[in-house]
Length: 607
Image (tube, rainbow, N blue to C red):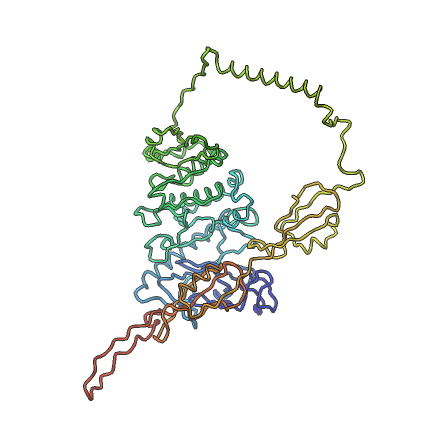
């Protein structure tokens, strides 16, 4: 079967056109080394599509299973500091001297994905289909679910930009259960963030974005992938061990973003000056156990942080933690976690109050801060006695007096109304209620038009009771032609013939690929990034005839249209090899000059 009419970006039929009508991807785009060319077959029946993501330990491709006729995702072990691939071969070439580390990391890659495959069926985990070796590397094939959306994109599309605790609790409690199982099987994710957690169409969150530890730790031997605001200090060069507490910091940071509407301050910044706060409107609205759990899990130093998922989950749900705390009792007593509530500055409104995470306790108490304990060593506070006024009466007497005054004022207003003002108002009694709608006007209920195609709505006899106006808008989350907003909410009662304004997706905003060949890589990368492209670099050997650091070619043709976020691979000329010079020879000397470096790939081996 030919797959020429299959789009390599969304794996849907595109017809004979090069630009896909579904996702607008240009299928004539090149996928330059070190990535596999599109339509390469691996594992006997998996078709390689466009690159969707790449980091230090590997690359993820959109894929297609030619046996089951379903889209998949394919992860290739491709450590960027150790291996290269030429344009005429699919086999990876390992840099000389890196063989031992390369194969050790490849085994780590296979073990990671092998463990994940054994845990297929966990409610909050992606499903792994197959793991195999080929092209001197390893591959992991996972499910692809159309309509899955990262937490990041979900929050950006949300009206408020954040969720309530009731909404977040339903989404994240199953994630914590799955995370605990991962930890029990020796898997520390090290990359939990809004970009690696996905909401599926079944409204459940799945953990994705797995990589080997070397990719997520500074000086691990690979290009380090970190997530600012979500990566704790032990991954950023602070000499302390990683563990379950590493993921707890990250998942708590994700919850902070979900509940507060902004990312936490970067951990290294907090290490120097910890000023992370929760605005009072959120601190007041969230259950106190949730605030306390976040405070404990987001401690900068690992030794001060919540140590395991069971405790974090118990603190979030405010269940009794004594039963699970015995093995950590001494450690918990050694840690003094406190929440500090800042008093209202004079003259400021209530919403200026903020909740500080971990300032120096004694200093804050001296400045008037109130201490609240969150754990089993909670202190008992004596109830404050009732205050008395200067005449000896209690506050209760004062309150009674105020209520009497208000009652007298209300009666006085009633007399004034019936004697002076009543002729200026119209009173509707139960048997005299009138309707603003004529009895001849039919009342209908507005349907939910979201995610329906506008063209189908216009033609459907079901919606003949309404008139429609169309407003178009770019959307990265919704396919072109689908409704993304309506000006009258679903369920609203309106008169027949009412005009409803529907906002319709134009699909992802298209940007034009500029000409960058001949530019320096830095200039080309900055220009492409500012336009909305993602940029990847692939170095190419230079025999000395080219200007090093300049762009030889780009994977996308200049002038072509693409969606924002499309990956551009730039081939860049490497530094030219240094050619040793020889001194002038005497007449008749036939000594030949030292030859040039035979080329980049002579420094690689192909086991």
